Length: 626
Image (cartoon, rainbow, N blue to C red; front, side, top):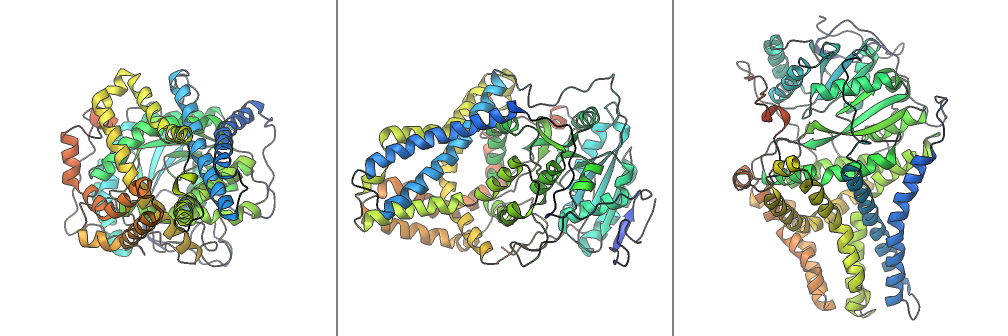
């Protein structure tokens, strides 16, 4: 085992190597990872025929989204365009139809996923069983990048996976690498904890901390590829809060060996470990509503799937030749290091002809932010990263059309919030100024019914999917508790929607004005927040609620705006209440938002019990700029 610093493998001649504060790692096996030239189309793998079936699927999904949007446009034009369409009415129609098409696209994807999981029994979206006649031949590294995390929590989750691999044929083909970008104080605690506890593991567990956090997580992974990638066929990339069973990792590695044209397989992780009410709510929604939408997306994405940066297996040499990310010219948000690297890395793999697939897996997990403010902090970073992709759509030569579409959808998702806000202001402003009576621009009863189906239909389909399987139904506490959870989810979602709308709007305009986000350690544990702090944090939401109330009264439209202003006014209370662990425990005791335990809890399978070494301190998270 090597210890200490040394020149980084793969560094160009004359380039200053990255300092490494501490490491206990195997001998280096370098692999070149060249920086990609976005302006030049690279050579792609040959022999990949045009798949008319997958393109027919995509056209079907688009048609299912555009058809109700066209009907809505026709209906709204009949109601407001009988005497011609003014400029203000044109703006209203453009906003309404665009947003209608967006929710119709989500509904069509969920509907297809529901049919796949019920009629099709999910055969096209789940990995195949691992066969004893096909032993694993290659070596797989399991990478856990960490940055100022609760390191004992990381080691506890690692122990779950390490012991699970011990029960799987071929588990000896896997090794763990903890790749730390933590600061000096947390790094010292990590070093002492690792040295004291590594003897508890039955297979190789390596650790390395960089002294300089260059390039954030993609730079962390790239440094590992350049130094050790030559010795491994695949890498399972995880986050610090990820858990994946050994069986799933072995099945993914087997599929990579059976399909040499596949560069990446992304599992769809579900949420675990929720303690606050907010996290329990999101965990319930992820487990119940997520699978049908994920199945539909997998169905139309085909070999042009997405990468979410964790809980995925990657072919190392494909990643090395395709995904060396350059630093973009200019200032943030469009310049500097690429933040949302994962979606772009999937697109770059497809640019060279590698297939990127997605699969559902019942034992691939991640944690969720414990409160609304923590979610919005993470969401702001994602917003900047996705907006950074917009100019790249036109600068990167050779991208697959579906990859361009996915990058565009990822960026446009953050534009829907300002569009919703603009639609509300246009309707109320037009009514208050006398351009139209309040009821003139509201959808008809039939169109409102269609809108309700598109919004809540995926939740109803998810209930039907869960009720159809007795084991799944029991996992959610039975039909009655599950239905009660769905009702609570709908009510909380209605309150949270306007809060997220304004938050994302503020974030988007702040990013476009040059206020960049920091990418520091995430807050993964919280127990409540002070009401005074919540009121200050959501002050703009309270001001918007007051403004919309006054505008709605003047427009004689307070009735339909009530859910919006109620959510804005309730935002501090909602954030503070749902961030509490005692409320989360109360919900658990009363069966609200109940989900099945992860496999290691259901089998009384516990991680090793770790304690902090004497004198070691808990991690200190760097403050985010929010």
